[in-house]
Amino acid sequence: MSENNKLIFLDVDATLYSKEQRLVPESTIKAIHEAQENGHKVLINTGRPLVYFEKEILDIGCDGYLCSNGVHILLDGETIYHKTVPETVVEQIKRICVENNIYGTFEGENVLISAIIMLTFIHIMDL
Image (cartoon, rainbow, N blue to C red; front, side, top):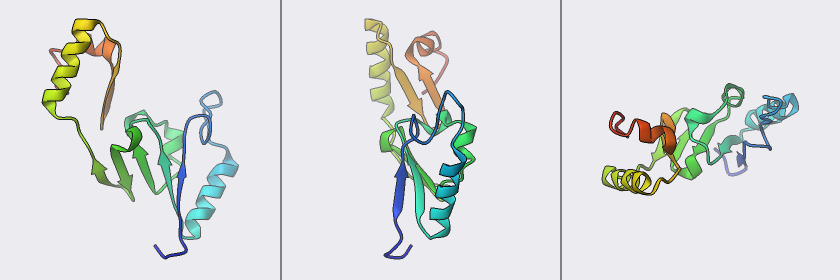
């Protein structure tokens, strides 16, 4: 990437992608591709884990994704950063959720589990 090329970061929900219409506007896709043709890198920056992206978003062909608020970063199809929570901490969080009937979400590279559902499978699944 040259000094004149830029990194362009795009949000997903209610900006790039409309859940109601289930689409990314064609004009947006065209603008993204034009930016890429001009040597710029276009990345999605979102709180979502990658597993929670709609096909329409992935089909755009962005250069990278900053997922789960930056703890999983992919660039040109390769994971360049992935921060995980130590298993002992995950176990503590699970225990606290169960003991206090707390609703929450556990996210992983390939999974997004609601704590209510997770509590049913707490002894089956190994997060």
